[in-house]
Image 1 (cartoon, helix red, strand yellow):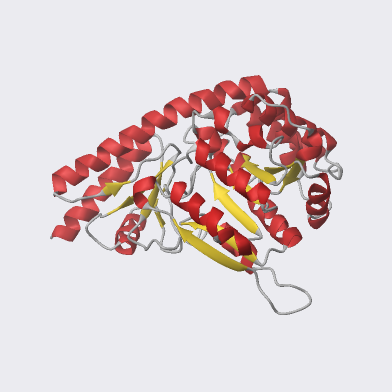
Image 2 (cartoon, helix red, strand yellow):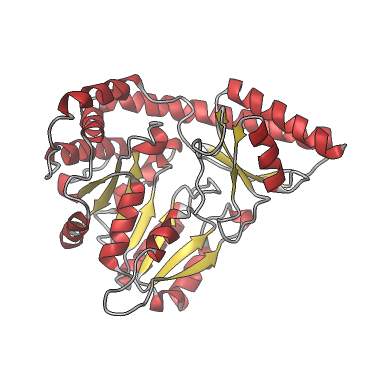
Length: 377
């Protein structure tokens, strides 16, 4: 399984492979991490009471809905929570719109049933480029018809990765309704949701209506702290939620992650301002990257395709040279990008670029022009 951010085997000066906030970590949470040192000599609270209360306040007030602390399952990053869901539900058939985050299949394929050597089967539904790689009414029709008959778990991402687009809200609600009628759990990954302007369309607002809905959020992306490992799963089903908690290690949060979440609850209004600023500036930086890519297309007479995105990354293809070759040439110049060949059905000619500040974009596009000029020669 490939991920971005491999600084450990590469010389990286500018990382466009990981999708974290281009504004960086807010100062209030940086201070919280320092405060975590004071509690590093003690075990974190195994009941996570203060963390769960803080998460319910932080996310609930932001989404303008009431969330119970009992619904909150904190995790050592979203990946741990995805794995815990798989371990508890042990679905025989997972329905997965693709292309998507590779962590879903990684979690599923790592689990085998104890009574027999049977693995979880992933059934892929190929979404369409023209619809931003998001399920649309055609997916709903198939789901309503026969796809759901063998499905034990449906995973959706909003916005999706690597496409970066949001689902149509009415389609999302229709899918949730159909899944609820068939008693199919739905894991809705909203790890990039805070980069969008559509707060009223969060799945957190739908949990009262659909008890089969699990919503996943993460601090990694929006607060630029992948090393801290902090995520939250929201599950209204009390029995299922308790089973997921028991599948996690007893102390799965560090004192640092605990301090960050508690601080976010206390400083939530201040952080909401940071989130609003993030949405505005990320949109501006994303548009800047789009214009620069269009400029390369015009200058080099190449049809470079950049897919519409409302998130903090852009999926591209058509650079006129093999994607792995381009990525390798960029890496020689200290720039890391994400080839998407492991995101079925894409290939390595699809390259995902994180939205980064203007000065980092300058370095990226200077290197891109040099690589493409070299290819022409």
